Image 1 (cartoon, rainbow, N blue to C red):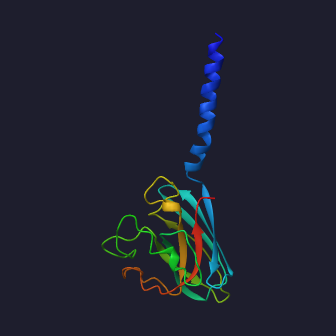
Image 2: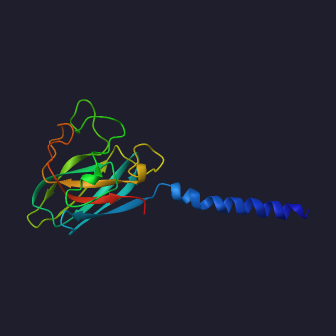
Image 3: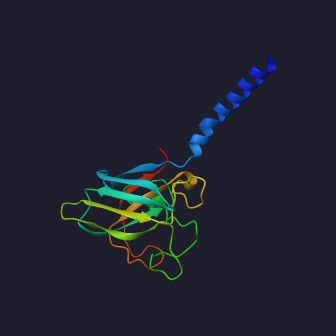
Length: 179
């Protein structure tokens, strides 16, 4: 009878030791992305939330030029200004071509819309990113290889031209990492 409490205590300690590892690998319910412009100004936020089989994205951006701008998820969690090229190419673990309208499929990081920035330099909108997940163990996770980055481009995405949709330069960036 005296060994039972010792064994129970050892089992409880082992289970408790495993908890932090489990918590680190669990998919977060939401992630907030902080954007910066190429000249270092605050460009607002995006909130990513788990949604059945997809990620719901809600953006509230500012300090951007008015007009239509592409938004994509890029493969690296790096936002080195002024050109943000350290973010790499579009997030594409499935190896598809660019463009939501491409008959050959599209990059996981291609978003279903362009952002319409108002004359005041702001945009608020929400959309569904159906080809990515917040599950860190999935190959299409926005946390793959240490994270990814949201990029806002200077022009609209034509939704078909490979590899970038003729979206032009990169004008804002935000890191997508587990917090």
